[in-house]
Length: 144
Image (cartoon, rainbow, N blue to C red):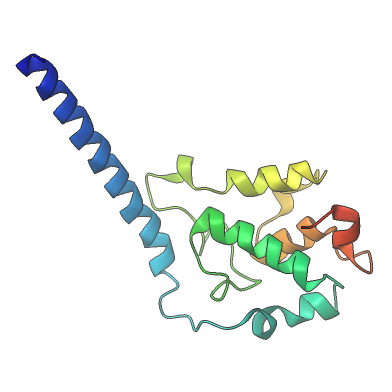
């Protein structure tokens, strides 16, 4: 291989690594917002969703795992009132890659048409589970 080709490959690899590493640190900024929040088991923060909204624990956990995957914030730290436009917003400059598109797609795949009205994690859980109108929303929504 020629020297210019090796140099070009080296620069490309270093640039790719730098972009990847910077992207990781940007994701960590969102997660660090929750450092002070106590980690709690699901029932501690989410029991009213199972009782009042009749959402099964399986469906609740599946919805929260989607939020965790999209935001990087542990489900033990997520709360129903966490807003996608505030606590869970992407770091400045990375809004285009906030990870929340996956959540919109998950709702659209379930036939939710009012995705724009989903402002909090609690709203997402209710929309994902079918608004708690069924005894076991996951049976109708096919939660795994």
